[in-house]
Length: 287
Ligand code: G1P
Image 1 (cartoon, rainbow, N blue to C red):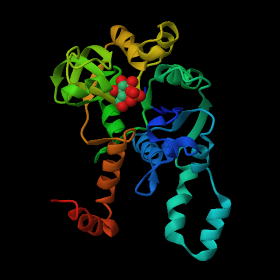
Image 2 (image 1 turned 30 degrees about the vertical axis):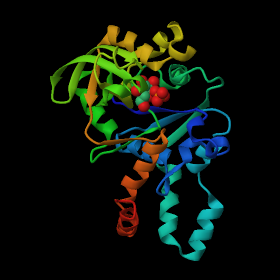
Image 3 (image 1 turned 90 degrees about the horizontal axis):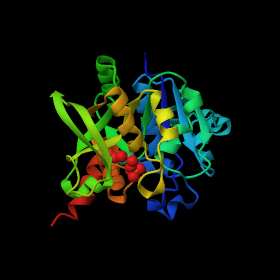
Image 4 (image 1 turned 90 degrees about the vertical axis):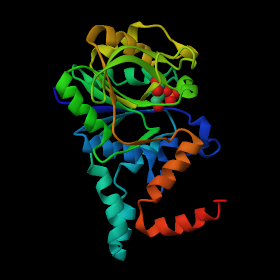
């Protein structure tokens, strides 16, 4: 069955970016001039997704506005003949269908995904985490859709991280069976380096089957007292098997200050109008 729906959790407080996130949703922080969440929604669209389900909390209305029409602004730009600028915003409202649901309590990533149950129904679907910005010639989610179509099993994106970083990620245990493909035996949420079964970390792209909802409704809360998606994956893996897919592309951790800055530099370097001046400026920092 085709993957048509993607869940994008956007209900966090963004505390790592305070004070800016006091009134501005983290998802709208820009990488160069585009909000992080627009990169994610564009990836979804380019991967064949037709419906995006945003999981939000209060204070995130500006995300919905970003993907809505702004008649006044469009009209002003049109009258001024600013067609270049108009082109940057005009297509946003009909790029893809977006609905949002509120997660009323911050009970964890598993709980956030569970809020989409009634909108997903009985079909496989994607989950994309807004903090993980992936720059790839073929969109990461599309790479995973192809893997799903071949193996017909849930697929999660993985990437090598250094040993000391395993406690920041879900970590997989599995056997490599093909180029970039691992058959998983287990997944563990944020293990200490000496307990981690590998250094392959789960990155925020998942293709899941609807059994995950019953599982999430029935498992207890895990690390940090939160309903962890990784704990749900562990059970789904037992029922259906699961693939870890080492995607092609550069990943930036937009949820971390350094990762966010690196993403800004990397994407700025792709812009001809910025690249040379940025390089000149950075030379001042090279000893
Ligand atoms: C979440 C998941 C974790 C995954 C990570 C990827 O953690 O729980 O398994 O490795 O996203 O970014 P978080 O970053 O929300 O702490």
